[in-house]
Image (cartoon, rainbow, N blue to C red; front, side, top):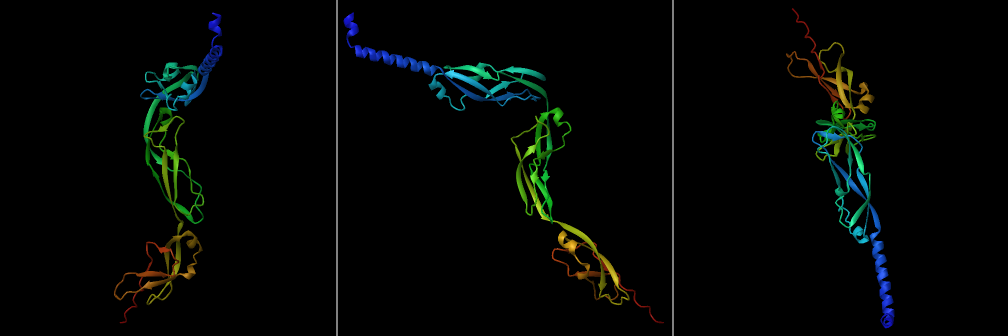
Length: 302
């Protein structure tokens, strides 16, 4: 026996040490732990919607061989679906069980947080509602918002009946037009009517186009008309003008010239049309166009 143990002693010692190293390496690998976050999805019953605050994900602490932990792909676990299809209206507590995680056989669950969630199911309603673009601020001086267009013009919204009961439209997030001189285009989210309401159909944003134009104004001016044949006294007319507000506000009536437009039909009794000269650029004459009556012919001598 002594000969057996003493022969190749160095080789036996090396084998023993190697075995111990392997033993402790395997033992250490089995004690590795890690934490993963798994998305939480609710499968709601038809006609009901959850209005309780449910966390978007749960935290799971796992243990297992380090190789198995490293081999976990990012999308291999989760999401965790809580099937509420058989639940009724009201408050309920739903526990998250280990078997719902679908773990590889060599991994174990150390803890799940939270291990249960509280849900509150309410009657769900759906409405097709027009979208209203909300503007913030004002364009630059002398400019105005001419037209606003929004796409989509209508969306379908679902949510608890109590949140949608009195809703008539869906607002967009404010679009800032402060100091604008040119068209404004923006992609904005919807401002939903309640914390549990949501837009269906995969629509998440509205495209808003705001047309900016020069501010226009109207003004009525009083002018004396010249060039009326046979007129014994000055005739005044009132004319309605429209143009850029900055020009209309500063317009001096004395710079305008009004004249009768004569025709060759001496027997006509139609009023003379009036032509206004020296109108500033961008200013136009509006209907009704001014006219002046023809002077009465002198009485015939007997």
